[in-house]
Length: 223
Image (cartoon, rainbow, N blue to C red; front, top):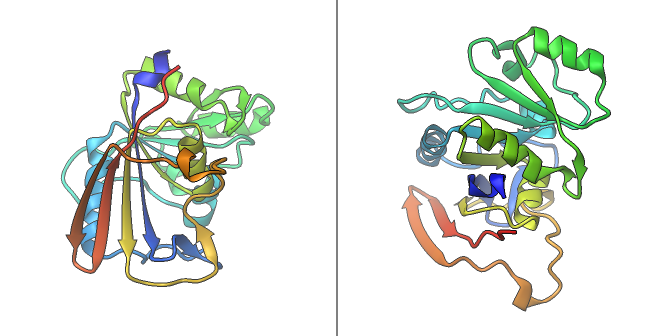
């Protein structure tokens, strides 16, 4: 299968109780400066970085590796209904930093024309069990030569890639704070028994100031 050769790294920062944002959506200061630079190094080391549209709407990210030296990756957004705002950082800067949006078959054509006029590449893919057909997304990325993809969020996208067993590497930064109610990092994976749990084949831990970084190698399902 073509897209299965794309190496996928999922990376996110969470609180001790597994939250990537507060109940109000605040997520920008969960981890410290050292682990933020680590995240930017991971971006630099991958050819593309992928987020869901909800992350764009909440955080308006640039998705660059500006904190470290190196070339910023291709920016990829999963956006079934083409809700990407033309004024957001990703769309407004698409002429200078390549941005690729994957939309569903029923996304409004007028939205596609507006984004294309800003330099955003839009590709339509079929719907799938995880919202969009993720293997098809990976196929299209690989056809352009992208074989190293970083998935950065949000929770629904992280869960979708893990549930589909598409992840090779999982890098989790855990910060020693408690948030209580908030946005969970990983949702339902369809696991009903401990024997079904995702178990890494290799585990490494590193401390960055007060933060702990877990670097896990997972077994990707290949079909």
